[in-house]
Image (cartoon, rainbow, N blue to C red; front, side, top):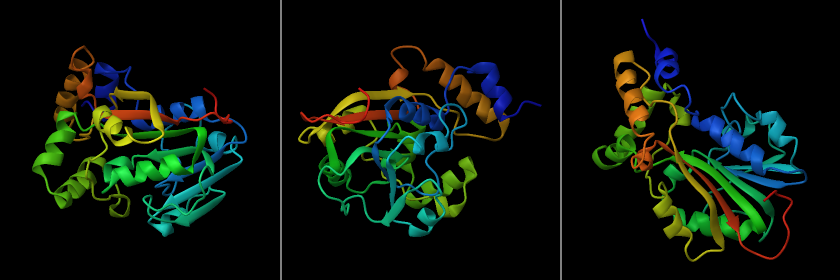
Length: 250
């Protein structure tokens, strides 16, 4: 009987798991002596298995600071040089303190994303980068969930579909989850988009395999123009404009 992995390999073997895409993006940007802040750091940098490992990435940086509202998760994150419990709308760091800010599956949880983007722009050094991966709200599954389900129902659905522990599931708002919305949020800030890429990750539905098959066929269909805007995830690379050099690669 087919299973989740075999259906993917049969129909869409070329798609990239969103955590692998995030790891690859970090590997392309992160350079030695980088001052790195990971917002919503949780217990690990990424959950990918292809591309730069968590260890390979953190050893390049001068420092890796983790920020999260759940302090207990930060205590379990062995990759951090230091950590702080804080809301991303009020980061306890001086202007220009970091060369890299990252957010792995965090933007969908922001209640007031504009304030967070303003803080990121403030603490980034000129030329610094903000790298993130998040669900793409224009994907029909994400859009329908955001419109038809309550926050509590979306949280319960994540627990069923993704088989995640309750402590790692948070309310979603999807207020910074499309290229158009990102551009709107940063229009008056010092951040400018270098890359806003919509891409297909693995299917949301893990079981039964028949439903996985149907979603995988949908993923196959939207790999053609003009349907690519319906892909499931969004990878972003924003740069703080300025004249000073940054240790990050361009």
